[in-house]
Length: 424
Image 1: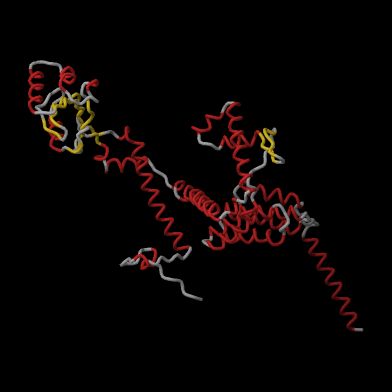
Image 2: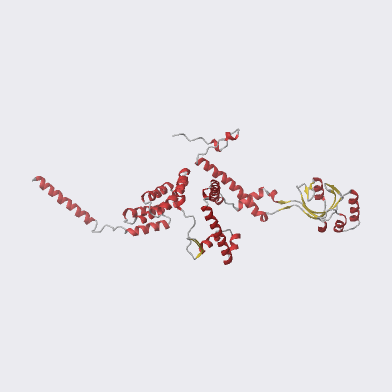
């Protein structure tokens, strides 16, 4: 009986405590939960404002409480994976999210794209072998050519070529080529060439040339070269920047490379003997015009009608036009003044009387004039540096070992000095 009374008292006490708690809350109601669809909207807002971690948390809560179709669930996971990959650069979490899509929802539209994004995750995590393996698995997922949606321009059997396909291909051409196909007639011309190429390709397939060992080898080499060029563009050229200060520093350090040397434009009278040369020189000293003496005395028929003009002789170059290497003659010509006619000189093809038609003194070319050349040189140097850096990174990441001894090298190269990893 005492136990019953004691239990009743405890129950009364518990009710009293609950009453006090409710009274202390002032009768306020508990806050209502956020509607499910509002959670998704909030997550998208977080993402648009750069609050990526809050966006992921909100998306995860949405997935936990929302009853949504499988396709939509996969799309939300894909969004989370992209935030991890592109915005937060948390590659392991991104990879895990894309793996969820691949394993749990393989039939959804998001699955193939998630598989491709996994390649980028592996690459960012320096897991080249896994990236290559995954790439081989998804290579055939991409269609060869994006189908057209515009008016049909031509039909080859069941295959159609649409106008927007033609315009898209032309738009991808370099500027100098694209200008050739602006008119409707030129677009028709391009279409005919495309059809011809497609017909030849179809015929080659029927002959099974695509299975020919040599053809497949060449295709692999072309593919390798094309893809390597794409990566080179992305990892080398796009990561090299040349600033105005880079250009100025290089120019100041290499000003001697941008000097126009002393140059003389020469004309000549070619003669086959000393006597003829002396006779012609005497006539010139007596006042005969040089061009008239050329026509009367010169045996070089190729320059007679041009007043005997040969071309330029530059300081630092030992050759003379049509005479070849003739350092003594070149040096003497550079010493002569503009308009001067020199004494007969013996050359490899007879005797010559030279006239300096024009003399241009040495000139330092200003930076404004050679800026594009300097920039190209600096960019080339920086690209070489970045290329070597990328090569070193790849050699280390892929654990490449180069055996110099097979080439008879006496010392190991830098790449082969890398210590082999311990076997686990």
